[in-house]
Amino acid sequence: MIGITGFGGYVPRLRLSRQAVAQANAWYAPQFAGRKGTRAMANWDEDSITMAVAAARDCLGAAGDRRRVRGLMLASDTLPFVERLNAGVVAGALTLADDVDAIDLGGSQRAALSAVAQAVARVKAGGGSTLVVAADNRKTLAGSAQELEYGDAAAALLIGSENVLAEYLGGGTLSVDFVDHFRSAGEETDYHWEERWVRDEGIGKLAPKAIASALAQAGVQAGQVDHFIFPSAFAKMDAQLAKACGIRAEAVVSMLTDQVGDSGLPHGLLVLAHLLETAKPGAHILLAQFGSGAQALVFRVTEAIGSFRPARGVSGWLARGAEERNYTKFLAFKGQLALERGMRGEQDKKTALSTAWRHRTALAGLVAGRCEVTGSVHFPPSRLSYDQGKPLQDTQKPYPLADRPAKVLSWSAEYLSYHPAPPHHYGQVDFEGGGRILMDFTDLDVGEVDAGTAMEMVFRIKDTDERRGYTRYFWKATPARAAAIPHAN
Image 1 (cartoon, one colour):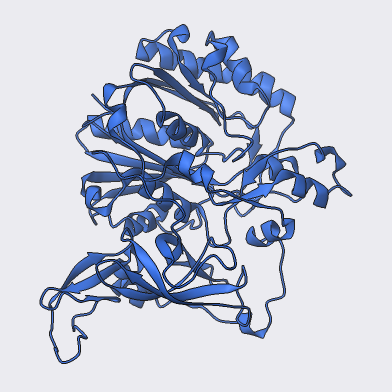
Image 2 (tube, helix red, strand yellow):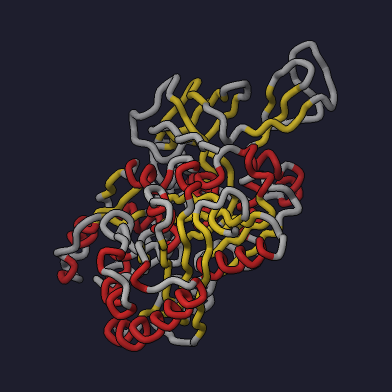
C-alpha cells in the first residue's frame, strides 16, 4: 500500500483584514467595500522557502524522524531563486541527509498535485519515502481583486509505504495550454483573463475530464466521494463542479477562504492536510486542482489515521492568527512600498559563499557542537572546545538545536537601527540541554517577551543582499504560544 504517511501545513501568523484593504483603497476601488474576513500575510522575513520549511517541520516532527526521507519535491510558483536549488535550502534546514534527491517544481497551479503523483511513482519504484512540500507567496497589484483573494501558505505530505494514513487509489491528468492567467519571466504579478470565460470554457470543461479519469483509475464512483477538494477563487465553483461530476453537495470541503484566502499552488494540499486532521477511516477523498489543464487524485483514509498528529497542524496555525489592519505594512512587507531607511539602513550585505559553505550545517540546520568530554554545547560548533581550562580538540559531535525548547535569558527592543518591522527585537536564548545564542526575534508583539519567556525556533530570512540579489537565511526565535502536539508514532 502506498499513500500519505504524514501531513502538515503552515499559515503565517499575520492575517490581513480585507476591510482594512478595502477602506485604504476606497477612493480608487469602492467595489471592494463589502469584502469580509482575512487573508494570510507573510511576514517580511518569510518567503516560499521559509514557509515550506515550516510546513515540512509540521509534517515530520522531531529531527530524529527525518532519516527516512529519501526524496524531497518542492513545488512553488514563487521560488526566490531561479538558478539555485531551492529544495536544497529546504533540505539543509530540515537536516536531511546529503544524498536526498531534491527537486524544484512549478509553472502551474497544479504542480503540487503533480509532485504527489511523482512521489507515488517514486515510492512504487523503490525510491523510499518522499516529502512533497508546496508553498506560494504571491505579489499582487495594489487595489486589485487578487490582493484580497490571495493568501500566503504552505503544505507538506510525506508519501511512503509504511503506516499509510490515506491510500493513494489513482489519479487523472489533463495537460493543455489553456491560459486563464500567466506571469512572464521577470514579472512580479499575474495577468488574469475574464472570469466567466475561465469558469465556463476552462474549469467547467477541463476539470471534469481529469476527475473522471481519476475516479475510473481508482475504481471509485462519484457518489462514493466523501470529501471533494477543489481550490478556486471563484465563489461556489467547487459546488458547481461537484454537481457537474455527480459528487454529492455535502462532500464539498470548505476552502478556508475567510481565514487564509486562496494560497495558489499549495492550497489543495493545505486543505487536504486540514481535512486529514479529522478524517474518518474508509472515507474517500477526491482532490483536484486547475492549471494548464487539471489534475485529480483519489485517496481512501485508513485505520491508521488516528495514529498520527502533525506537530501543530493547520488548525493550530489557524488558531494562532493575529489580525493585521495596517495596509501600508502589507505593501512594505511585499516590497511594493519603499520606506525611508535612514543612514543606518545603508549597509552592504554581501555574503562570503565560501564561508557559508564551510558553516552550512550550523547556519542552515542550527546544529551546534556538544563536547563528549565536558558535555558543554557550543554554537557555532568548533574543532576546539572553549570550556575554561580544558583546551580539548575534536571532541564535539553534532547537536541539533532547532527543535529544542528554549527560553529568553536577556533581550532588547530598539528603534535605533534599521529594521523592516520595528522595533528590532533580539536577545540571548538558552536552549534546554545546553547552548546559548544571540538571536533575532520574530512574529511577536511589543511587550510579549521577557526574561524566561518560552521560545521556539523558526527558519527565516536573515537579510537580503539587494545589490546582488542574494537572500541569507538563518533561524530566529518566536514565542512558543501553544505547546506542540507530539507525534503518536
